[in-house]
Amino acid sequence: MAVVFIRHLPQYIGDRVTIEGWLHLKRSSGKIQFLQIRDGSGFVQGVMVKGEVDPEVFEAVEHLTQESSIRVVGEVKKDDRAPSGVELTLTQVVLIHPAHDYPITHKEHGVDFLLDHRHLWIRAPKQRAIIKIRAEIIKAIRAFLDSHDFTQVDPPILTPSSCEGTTNLFHTKYFDQDAYLTQSGQLYMEAAAMALGRVYSFGPTFRAEKSKTRRHLIEFWMIEPEMAFATHEDNLAVQEQLLEHVVAHVLAHCQVELATLKRDPARLVPVQAPFPRITYDEAIRLLQKDGHDIKWGDDFGAPHETVLADKFDRPVFVEKYPTAIKAFYMKPDPERPEVALCADLLAPEGYGEIIGGSARIDDPDLLMKRFEEHLLSKEDYAWYLDLREYGSVPHAGFGLGLERTVAWICGLEHVRETIPFPRLLYRLYP
Ligand code: 4AD
Ligand code: MG
Image 1 (tube, protein in one colour):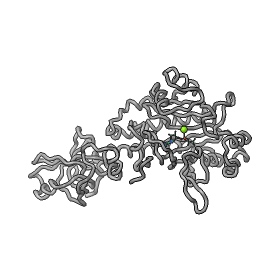
Image 2: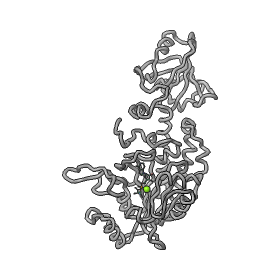
Image 3: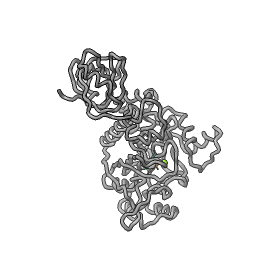
Image 4: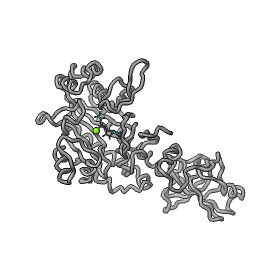
């Protein structure tokens, strides 16, 4: 008898099937045992009635413990009340390996305890749902970019210099040279855009940020599209269309997972392009009107971003920040050089900045001037400066933080649950 994945059970109603998985939960009324079985693809309830099966099998099931691995045989019954739509009438249960005193019980546990047991915690329905949605979000991002003329290009992880400032670099030795874990693949993507036109990277990035907030990870994954000949306007259009596509994909394919997370899909339905746009100037005025102590030239903190984003039902672009508080490579607005042709995309419900992007300086002289102002080494970045020497073109790109996007779409309290094994300020285990 072929082994069937739980997810496919609705196609086998009336059949006898084998399932291989783990015992998630067991209830018993003495005469009837209810087994919640999970196999990774889903959860199903198996029912075993005393007197209808071999007494030895019934007796063995009474001693089965949570998370023991099992192989079961049963008949698939339609059950409209069950989330999976089916139930199994069990005739056989074989123990593969027992689990003794599984530490994560069905009671409440503290976050530190759960993070110490993250290798087991990911088996929980909620964690499984998040990992599943994360995978679907990645799939949707790739599908969108691949079908819009982008080519994936992989930047290096070990780099000789920084991209986003030197304060939070992870240092390591590269034989007898110094090296840093990448903060962003952007500068390499700019080189790739000059070779392939529209490119994107998708990989891990690292920031030794001493931030212990619900939005910060030390290791996080970024999607970084870069487009030759693209303007600031083109850049924002790609971002809003990309996110519209991602959210629609999740709504179409992850209803079971959203329900497991108790995430109200109605909160995601309005996420359609075009997204609202406000300028940094307007944002400052809005915050001042709301009584915040902030002036032109200040950067936003998390509370500011939350206040701004809460005014909208979908993500909002805040564009044209002061050049002085943004990265060296951002192109100034030709009409107002004190602001940059950049935008941060803020997610609603307090999730903050999920995308940072800009048009890049394409003029070699201006870039050289910025290098001097920012005290950047022309030798370290000689290859990057070359890009402006040999057929420089206007170009733009952005970085989408995967974990913050997953946190927002899933409606999670903290980014730590959006990645299977989070690297946090005080956590490198497991
Ligand atoms: O705004 P950031 O720093 O932009 C860049 O790195 C650009 N070089 C990207 C580009 O234009 N190619 O980071 C981009 C995004 C942020 O909007 C945020 O979503 C995420 O990366 N991010 C983090 N996510 C989790 N933990 C952290 N510590 C993060 N830092 C940034
Ligand atoms: Mg940013």
